[in-house]
Length: 185
Length: 185
DNA sequence: TTAAAGTTTCAAAATTCTTTGAAAGAACTG
DNA sequence: CAGTTCTTTCAAAGAATTTTGAAACTTTAA
Image 1 (cartoon, rainbow over the protein chains, first blue to last red):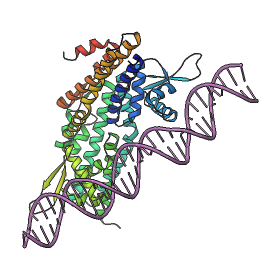
Image 2 (image 1 turned 180 degrees about the vertical axis):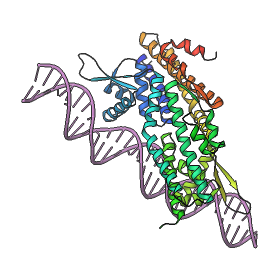
Image 3 (image 1 turned 45 degrees about the horizontal axis):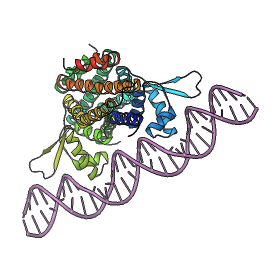
Image 4 (image 1 turned 120 degrees about the vertical axis):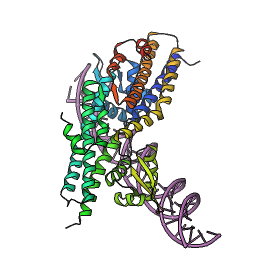
């Protein structure tokens, strides 16, 4: 019979892999989810070496992954008195993590996407207005509106934990100017 | 001076790349977003060859990408009378696309994740109940609760276009049994 | 200051993902 | 039916991402 410790580790890995998959489906590296899960289940702070051993991850990868997890605000670095090495613990507030990750993600691409769509729109506006260019322009502006509406909705969600996307339909049904002017209201 | 067509194409590519980036940040291949965008801006149905030419994508990649886009329900295949080849057009209803994609994503991993977390939980329940195993068990059950709450919220969002994640805090504050039993209520 | 312990960096290796293009397969046409 | 056109498949190539591990760096303690 294997010592209880082994079974506990096995359960831990099973859970870590499951959450790793979830995290991967949302566009992060699987190992980030696995590390966070090990810390979350452990409860107490663990050293990088300890985590690396349990998950079979090299010291280099651990260092990089832990830095990244901290950037996303889902893992904290802590020091224990008398101990030389650094320890890490998981953030346990799910909402905090979700909102931070959403906010960070948005921040990373929002501006560049809007800037490019605006540039595309400007290019089309500079063209002689045929039916074809007017149509394309309308479509590009719909994309831009969508991006703005989605960003606004996401911001609201982060602030209030609540979203209502009912107005999304407007992006299909109404002339684009009407939708966009409503944004501030 | 370049003919207007070139500028229109340039604008199209600019927008396609921008939306490609958005889509990539949400875990899909960039080319899927680029193809959808070209179709969306074009409005009318285009052939695979036509799209491939505009985006510089091989016929093989086009075929695979278009199949995938159809699986996600964001592009439709259409036939034109008298034309031998197939044409494609973009779904334009943003909400339809978002909800379908969320639903499909969830379907793909939900069961396997829950099954593994339940297995981990069962393993820990089979262990002699020390403080350590009880703690780990609590944490694994919190993860399972979180996954269930998130899935329920996502399902609700897809149905009603509305989410309220206020209860998320419960996953941190309350004993886990209380949170999970509340689920049905 | 030196040694020890621990962490970070980064080039190379390994792995995974994506694309290509040729061949096979369908579907239509005369 | 044979030829033509178009689509799909898939093995190999290419690209991108991730991981490793050794060297460089940092911090602490004596």
